[in-house]
Length: 158
Image (cartoon, rainbow, N blue to C red; front, side, top):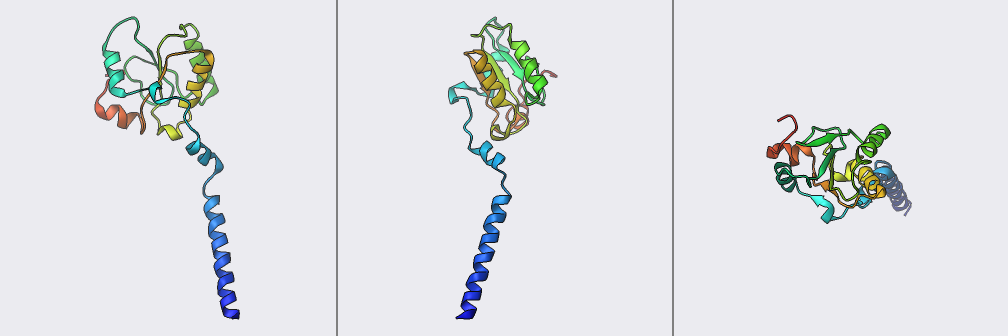
């Protein structure tokens, strides 16, 4: 009986250790990022092929495209830089200040998947707060390299 209690006690201690060790490996910040819903709707996403079509059209109603990350500029994009940096967020605000609130605005980062991106949500929320009504997020679920460059879509350098 004493041996059985020792085994059960040892098993309990090991399980407690494993449970607490496993939870210590996952920071609350990373859990919050994964569980936090994105602030845009599916209707506010624009597919890369659709943006390519818009880029190839030349008219006055074309959207303004902002690169709000640390990736290459796609054709026609205005480079802002990572808006997780306060100076770049201010730069974005200054660039859009003179635009009509109904002007179509497309933002993209492409540094990493949406669930990990430190730039897309803050920029989207800031534009929304400023009153822009036609904000689109370029749908780059993996990154710019995979969802744009690998498909040979136009870059500013081409």
